[in-house]
Each structure stands twice: as structure tokens, then as C-alpha cells.
Figure: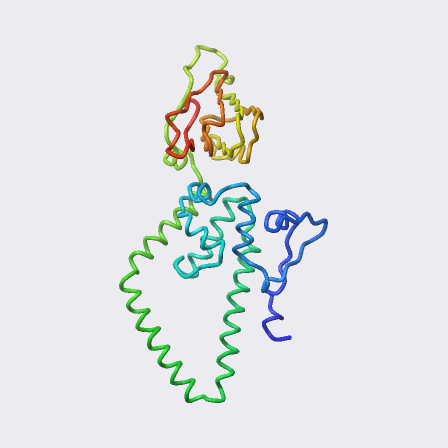
Length: 284
């Protein structure tokens, strides 16, 4: 057994929840995988499909180009911006899917170490011809250096801007505030205020949803707490009592009827060209 097989990257132990999300396996005991033989992209793809979210919807939710998500899911990292970006994207995607990114990062690190190990082995086989290897490596090193210099001066500003955008995305997910939520949602809807001495009743904000067809919804309350995020099926009805205003994201806006404090809400103006609805609802 070589040195690589003795590293901490060889075996990754998944919890029951991680095994279900990343592999669809219902295990009664810790689930072990060989990190060198696993596939980081496939794990993220399975987690997304487990949550029943399309690439386009996931990209819209985290403000990330769907093509980048596809590249991450197929382990194509050349155009994703480098090591910091790759790990950032993995964290960003896993966090939005309510999945732990740690096992995916371990598998990614194992893949990187495997490739580095293969390169070291290749170089060792060339030791019988050190002069030829030195010349080749020198030429390659010079070419890489020149390409790096050109790349740096040509794209440094672009990469810096991308890094700032990625940092902002991660910050929004970890430290959501009411102001940040308000900026990312569209129209606002409410019902007329009633003259009622029972202020507590008005503040409760009864929210009723009835699904006419299957779709995916997310509801966030005034404190930034996710009170519902899942797929709903036709003819299901839900009632919520929380802290309005609510922030709603509905994959198919025409599939849901909504009533707020007993009054039906017409949110047609919140539908985009694809039928997705993103809006605020409640007292402002």
C-alpha cells in the first residue's frame, strides 16, 4: 500500500442523514465511502435531486450561473476560477441544499491529491533520463510562467470582481437580515388593516396555502427564519402562524392559492416570464 492510501483522505464516514442526501442510502449505521473512488460532483447532484430542485431553480436561489453548477456537478473545474472558487461554490451549493459540505470537500481533496500523486509517479519514472526530464520541465515551467503572467494582467480584475460576488453570496446565506431579504424580493402584498383592539391577533399573520398542482415553495419570516422549504403536492393545504411580513418563493406561482388573514391574495404581478413568483406578504 502506497503513502497516498495511508492518508486521512482515504475513508470518509457519513452520518445517516448524509448517506441519505448524497447517496440515497438508508443506513442504520455509519456509512463509509472511499474518498479516492468517490465523486464530489455526483454527490452534489444527488443532493440537489434529493431536494427535488432543478439546476435553474438552484442557480436562481443562490444567484449563480446554472452552467457553473453543471460544471461543479460534472467535476469540470477549469473555468470555475481556481481553488478558492471551487471550494466556495461547493460550500454555497451544499448549504442551500441543507447538506453538510464537509464530506464533499474531503472527496474533492482526495481527488486532487490523487492527481498530484499520479504526477509525482510520472516524474519518478523519468529519473532514468534526468537531462531530458530537466529540459522538458524547464520548457514547461517557462511556458506556464509566461501564461500565468499574461493571465494575471488580463484577468486579475475579473477574478477580483468574481471573488467579491462570491463572498457577498456566502454572506447573504449566513447572515440574512430583513433588509437583505427585502432587497432580493419583488412586489409586496397585504390586506387592509382592520380596526381591532386585539393587536396581537393582527401581528400573528395567519397564512394559508393550497396547492392545485405539485410545485416547490420556500417561506421565510420577518426574522429571516425559514419556516417552510420543500416540495408540495396537489390538493395539500398548509396553515402558518408566524411573524409577518413573509418572503415567498414559489417555483410555479399558478399552482398555489394564498390567503392572508382570511383574505385571498392575488399575486399575479409577482410572476416572472417562467411562472416563478417571488414576493413579500404581510404588514409593512
